[in-house]
Image 1 (cartoon, helix red, strand yellow):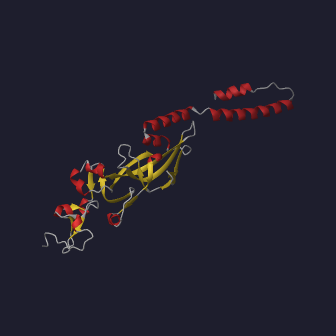
Image 2 (cartoon, one colour):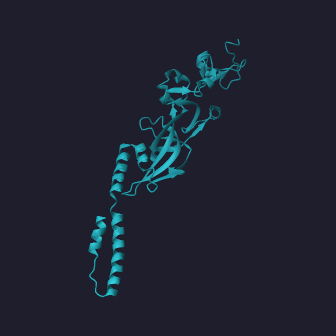
Image 3 (spheres, helix red, strand yellow):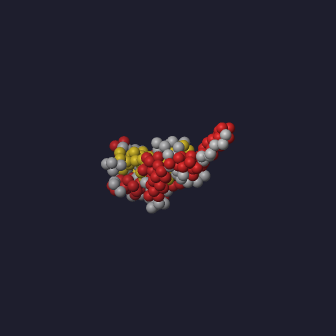
Length: 265
């Protein structure tokens, strides 16, 4: 190796007697080892320099999937963890989280954390923290492909999917909770980070899956939407939208007043 030969030449000494020569050789050897360690530490190998440049480039360009592929086989620079702390919240693997939507803060993204990753940039030793997430689709993302279903999809409804992506860990806002629709309806008030899920969204066909399992309600024959007001018939126990049966909620709410639907009259 070129550096090694140059160092050897620099530390050659003329021998006097044999003892002095041995002592000189030992000092020379020790000096070479120290100098070589110092040189290796301060001058990364060409491969490391190239990798470091690619890490910076991919991170800057937002090519996070390519960044992970570049280093995931390197156990020195790539590490996985079972939890992280973000915005004073502990986020664990398989936990659902609310994630920043830069274009619409009123409808942040929702995803399940399936990997927590750090990548060490070899030149500066800075850590890049990333997460692999399994996305849920939200209302506005789904109704673009299924506008006829807009009326019965709740603002707090999410749809399971197989879509997996890599995100920056600092884009996580906080953990969130995803309930069944039955448990969701039992809540008296709903926090921004509480959702329910009953269906899936196929990212390839752009269609909602599981619709055949939903019970249709009211005269409009739409699935249940917890955001809307319903009234139950005291005869048949079926539920109806106030707007669909032409009555005012205030006429019946908190009043011991019987309601009988048109089919039972």
